Image (tube, rainbow, N blue to C red; front, side):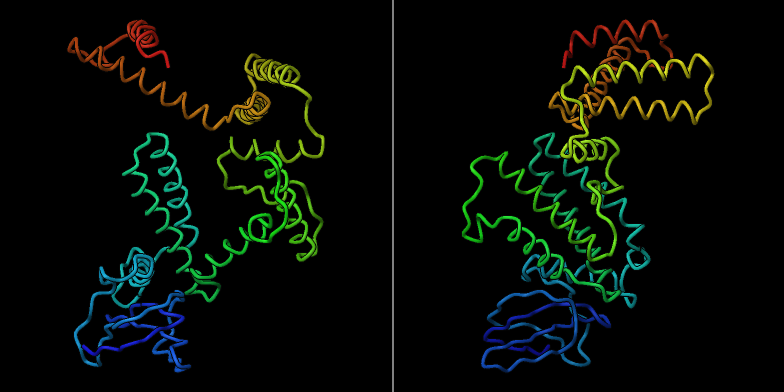
Length: 333
């Protein structure tokens, strides 16, 4: 094993190739920049000795535990994606196949926060970070961008959207003022993006289609409310809810087909979301809480039946309904 000693460097990355690790080093002290092999970018200043496999030496570990954690993760993902010695499953993945896992990991982060399970949160945040690195790695392989570009883009965006913090300008007086200023800056960015693309802009630009439907409904409603397309109070929205409920009931009575029933059900849900927004209630959080409450109460029913040596399969609906009422008293929230 040969050792390369550096006083300092501006760019260092580790990437697997041929069973070994390729180190990219440039911008060394004294102007003696050197690139040993092109790899992923990971900016860092390093002093000390860096092991580098001599020609003909046995394969070394892709990511020594002494490596800086983020550099180690980048190297591990690169190795997993390496078609020469990597993981077959990882090498077959694409942006589309990985996207569902990314969404799932984000939900698991939210779940850990909801449970206030901080050990789980650390683990889930790591899983989510892995998803970011994995996507960036695939993009780098396609020659689109690398992890450093992702980090640089969000850093630049945060600086740009907080001129009162990083630009020496006077800042908003309240959190509400800050939110309004933030939204104005995002709107300006969307307008600029539309002009670059040569298309007309819309107040609805940038509302991702992949969002959970309840969350997307809130965002759509908030966007149009900014231009005055909104009811003045919750009472007026409640009237809409009752109207949509009547329309759904009419379709049921008249034997409407599945498409019509689905359409009316969607209208009712969208209007209920609007009511929640006017009441200052986040519908996604509200439904999440109701799901958890339902689960607790049904588990209570199962436990009460099990205490009598029975199961839900052997119980009647009336028996389970009676236990459900009991569960509501025992677990009110």
